[in-house]
Amino acid sequence: MDPKDNLRQTLTDHELYLAFLEGDNTSFDELMIRYGDSLTYYLAGKLGNLEEAEDMMIEAFARIMVKKPGIREGNFKAYLFKVARNLISKHYSRPGLKDVFSIEEIYEDISDGSRLEESIVDDERKRVLHLCMERIDPMMREALWLIYFEDLSYDDTAKIMKVNQKKIDNLLTRGRKQLKEELEKEGYKHAY
Image (cartoon, helix red, strand yellow):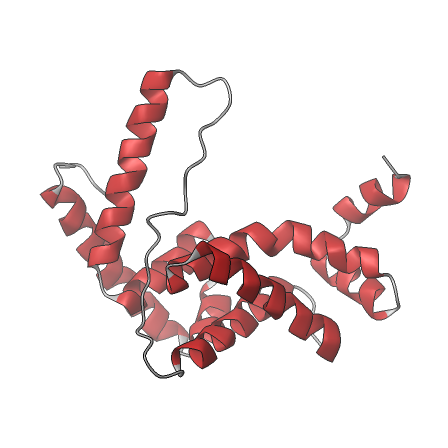
């Protein structure tokens, strides 16, 4: 492995982005490695199609690569997801498309070395979680996804969704309540 690769893995997003702006394209590759999969999963949940999500993920990175916007330190991931969300908005503004947020296909990973029974139980829990997530309001679902699955801050989530932080707090509170109710309908009595 190239020693530069190890160095790039220890750099912050901002340091990598600045290196890219100075002409180091491999730094941008590292940013794509860091966030490509999670952005694809986010987009797949919004689009309901993994292939379209992969294409849109590449387009989101390409827009940043071409425009080279000024991104404040610590905001690369949030900026990337905001670009992607704007692409989704443009995608749905096309006639004949409807807004879908399905995360049914997102998790299919089984950890190496786990026993078959544990994998089956984990898969069932994920299936139920995704089923219940699909039943709640799309705005609540998106807020829950960005905060809990993508580990974004309230501020970043508010910017991505183009709402204020109070709205995010409200969406999360109501979303958790609805999700708990849906999980209880599926037999999970101690959902929290």
